[in-house]
Length: 400
Image (cartoon, rainbow, N blue to C red; front, side, top):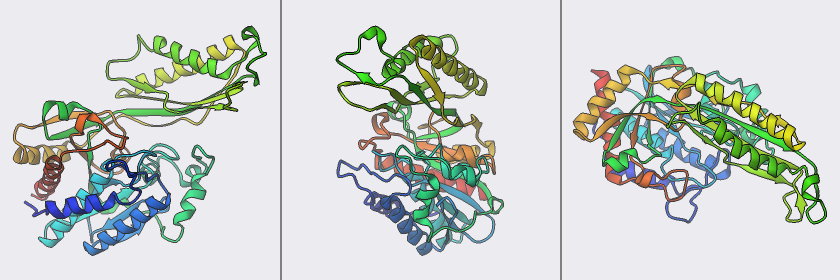
């Protein structure tokens, strides 16, 4: 087996969390294109160079550590949610770097490493890998805005001194992404590894209700055109409308809402909120979109509001490559006999996009108590090392 160094891997993984450290547990605050994110990428670039890889930033800011010639690409992302965990994405990048370095030291197969930019969606959905996979043109991506109205073009200008051209995907034989599960199943079953069979599809858009801003004390209830009441009504109705369409594994979330003018004594004149839904069936995702739009229009008509819809963002459900999965499964059985499973991913990952370009696969390690996208996110270090060894074992199996 490729002689990975678990102590070196863990030390560097902990060192990476210094960038954007929240001061609360092991949490990090490292959203895409922030000072902490860019400093972390530059530090990663130095580690890649020390490992004998050639570093390259593409126009979106994704960082590649490139081996010579045809190679297997591995990695994930290093940006975080506004309140993020230390392992989400970062684990996959640092594990890939350790495997690439150890393989090079042992004259093993060439492995390249990537940290994709904006996987967490400050500007969209897995922005860096979406643009690299040609599913979204850079010119169109540049017009995307974050919650504060900053455009992607403006944000990536912070990395203008680093970025170059796009990396040609033809130089890679495939892609493997290691990640925390971000759910409870492995942890509750006391299993160490999940080999991902498929990744669910996702849809995400903003909905806006426009009503009438007015005095909260003098405006009778029957005369109000309250935008927040429209949001609340929509939320209640959508749960009922979905009942005969969804399955137990379908999920939907209103994760962000803002009111204008957001004051105690004013009836809100505008409500803007996010609507996100996920499922493994593309047809069901499309039907849910129809229901969402129909329900929002009905609410607007019933309450005297105007409704508008932002751009639809999303990714299709994706089955992962059987050959790469078989290599991971064999390595998992060698490393943790009987303590692994095949499973779907309910979370979105860069592998979904990369699978449009090359054979792709994923493996998971447990999340303690199923917690992720929070400062409390963590994984037992024994499981982190098990994942590292499975990753290295899969590379060897693919070479054979």
